[in-house]
Length: 140
Image (cartoon, rainbow, N blue to C red):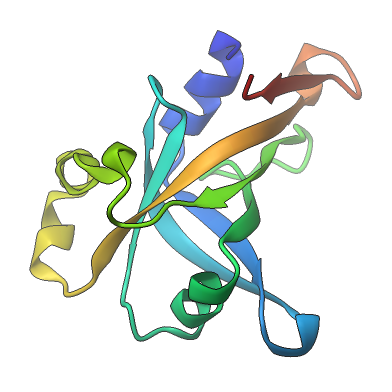
């Protein structure tokens, strides 16, 4: 992954994740995230009782966006990604909670589970690098 993509992801805090709900209707939710650079995994915390958790149990394919925490209308920057929600028994989920709580220690006091998205594709738009500049990363 290009360093500019990772640096942008690392510097932000919130993502919108989209899944497919009943009757094939898209459903999006916003959450705090932590990112594992080594394996390109996105960690987020949410209750197992949420509507999106129920949808993801049936269809683990996701897409999402990450926008700057401080939005500047003159500088278009952001991430579009797609991936797959991993099962809790997948070996890649082993240290997810530890990594998430390192970034958000107070989140340990809130009920919920830490979930793991295996990010498979990223498109990073950054007009500060030149109008229309896009950097692409794909899992091999």
